[in-house]
Image 1: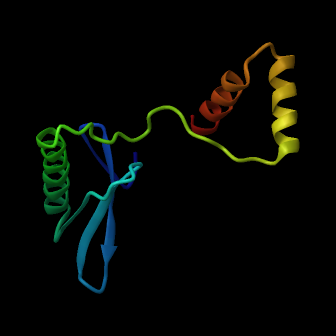
Image 2 (image 1 turned 60 degrees about the vertical axis):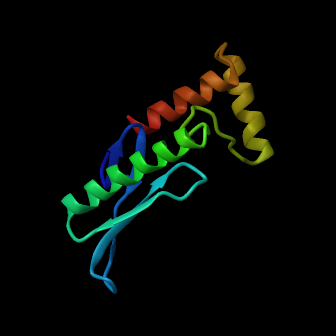
Image 3 (image 1 turned 180 degrees about the vertical axis):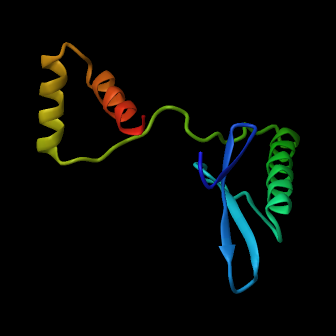
Length: 110
């Protein structure tokens, strides 16, 4: 995946601040804020790994379940007419709405 860091099932953004002349980012896909920074890509990666490890240790110490991103469920808001048409098309193909949308999404990213 281009432009992201990956570690322990967490995905982190990579940004550049011209004002501070440094790289920075945050873990994406969770409500909490896990941020990191560095003056080089290697430093950014190391701080990302450290930030994720610190987050997991904090959750363990507080006996809290860590947030995970991309659990496999999400809500999509679409026009009611599109919803109707997609449901009809799924039925015509003997598919559940979920299976139909999953196939469409898989085709879109492959």
